[in-house]
Image (cartoon, rainbow, N blue to C red):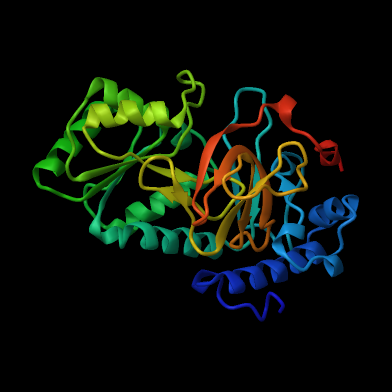
Length: 328
């Protein structure tokens, strides 16, 4: 099977089709992506020897800070850039076909939350709005527009206005989604604790240097207490991907059918762990067709038998092994 022969990425419905598409995309990206091909070559991996997912090399995510990870000859139409602390380098994701990103996040959101038109969508993403090139802002802005609700929109630092809007929406029993960066949601929780019955709280992670870091369980406990809700939802995405995972509670994430999480051995980054064991998070994102669909992140996690996964932390730089190949 070739990429051209593959069925629509967003209509994948079974493991066999996913694996066939992934192998076809691996061959395409090996051939048309110079950075990925050189990395595979340094590992001694050639497409002729790859017949299953476990044999596909995963590109360390740090390459997006140093290289232009592009598959094919098309010129990028959009550049997404990660946030970074002062003086630190940032990742850049050069996107040559923005429609793939649009179809990916729109289809996934529909699968997990239904039509955006049935929701009022509020966004509390100050650290993302204050810079350019955020893929998260691009996605949320699109969902806000598609919701068509007159009260949908972004909020920067005016937490009082956001609180008043939430109170109005609760009074009218309007189904609402509040998606926010962790530190801003905690600010809202501390300044305006409000019992919610018709609002979903979704955190996207990240203290962005504004607060001390805390584990997801502690964060969710604080938010559940302030808003008197049973579950806090989460979004798992990153600049280098074009797909997202979602959690509807307890930090257990599910992926859309064209995305898959695998766990690598922290002592041997080229080997995969069995289900239930923790290690480094590898992601297959088939929507990343013209970039790299096989990415080794710096997150630590574990995968369950049903394909759901948890994020349990991040690698310290001193813990990353086998990465001398990053200096291509």
